[in-house]
Image 1 (cartoon, rainbow, N blue to C red):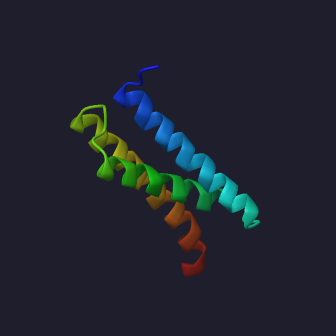
Image 2: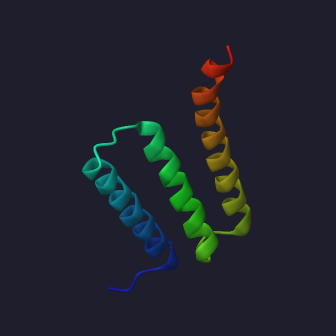
Length: 83
């Protein structure tokens, strides 16, 4: 079976996400924020280390969305400490 670049990109991201989930379960860490942050980091690393199958414009939009989600998680975690 011949895989396209998009399928290969999605498969590698899926494998990385599943590996992260398994490692977090083995370490008994059940924090959704940590899982989301690690998944965002994996996605950004995969985009940087490979040539994404979709255009650069779409990649920039996805990176901005990932940074926004990470910023929201960081804000949610740190704001109660300042009040």
